[in-house]
Image 1 (cartoon, rainbow, N blue to C red):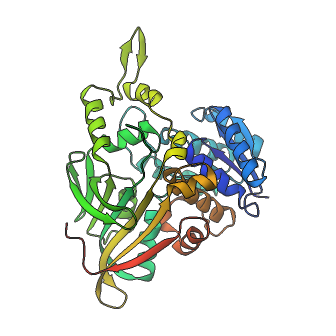
Image 2 (image 1 turned 180 degrees about the vertical axis):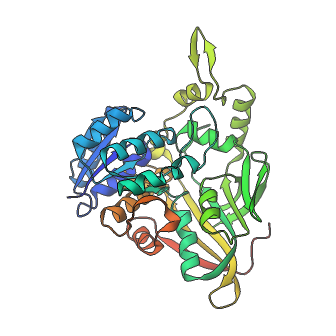
Image 3 (image 1 turned 60 degrees about the vertical axis):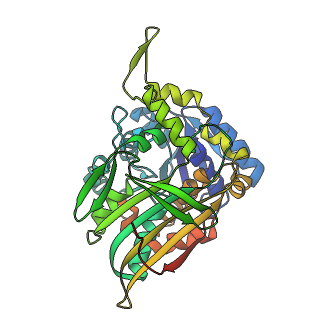
Length: 402
């Protein structure tokens, strides 16, 4: 029996649980838990209607280590899949250690009171998990996740040495809203408004948020403006591929999104420090999240495609310099038809299911804390093709001109 406990009932949790239910030979027993149990129950109903599989549900405050530990001991899963907020990573890791269960997530830890995310907090758990004989897999989403696997696969099969790596994340979808985010608004806005950082010649280079823009013609999407950003896989890629001279992350944004974001920043609505309103302490960004459309509600109206991938340059195994581009295209409407969620949730939820499946089957195993770059990319790449995120690779005539 491969019991799994999934914590987090947003769009990513919904996709992951749907896809787990579609693979009952691997996931024989699924429990979905969240602070709001009604969200779990709604996902469970959708899973039952689409697959005939019954998903158990539970209420949990994942900030409460003792309560989470008790739930894990009650469910007795072989793996806890953390699809909750990044703020809760350490608490859930603590609960897994206390209950003696393996752990997996899709995004690294971020403190609530600072828009700053890095792996150091979770890497510090290495000895604890190793001593306990448990495995913690970090970053099994798309970015981080698939983009890191793409890089690992390119190095394994095509490059003797990668010199530069660019990750390009394009959402060409249109949800019809004046302003909305395709995943948790609080996390999204904190990420976008943070200073940009990229890795170059052995050091971090920091630039103002959204200050570097380039245009790129994305397959099946078209030309889009993309902006240099910091993303957590840059940190782990720089650690595990130290020979890469430059690693950058780019994400596309429309002009309307950026204008709304500029206004919200100017009037203080993206602040994460508390303010007093009518005698009550509130966080402006959390209030903004409450009034924006719920990302999971955007599925029925979102049209278009995502295109996310890696462009690597370096010395090929044939002894020649080359530039290779490996990427996935995901259709919002196809994702919604299959799971009831738009493609941004789909592209993270499917890799979460795949990482969990590889751990449960023992294909990926070990004791300690692992980033996805440390593991064999081949079974993951095979499962992407089989479970809704097919990839393709093309050779570009020359490196990026920027």
